[in-house]
Length: 162
Picture (tube, rainbow, N blue to C red):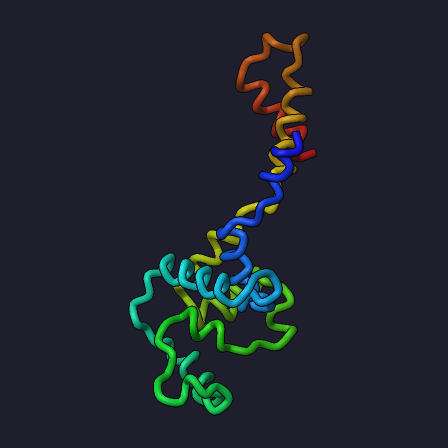
């Protein structure tokens, strides 16, 4: 039993990649070291298959901040992930991660936004599905084994939505 709990508590690369899409944790410094963060950022780059795009709004924002970053003195960043990692947002803009990716993120980082929508829609736990199976078990118990599948489906729907 303990081994199962240990497996459930392992933080995978998918968890770390999902953290990249939280603007307050995008650099991953709170959850892993610099080399691990670099590896995870590279995995995100591989996910979006960077095509050297330069979203104009991001380039304009970064041009005003370029003097703060010595490594940007010669060339502007060309991929969305680099632009996103260097961008700074106010607390109001990032207080709700989902809203951020629906509004600001989708306009400034369209490729990252698509990946964020896929990664952030995954539920953090399986509690809702376990709850649904528990309700279904109560509906289709031994004394009611002769119910038609459509009746079980309808009862399950009513039980979950009322």
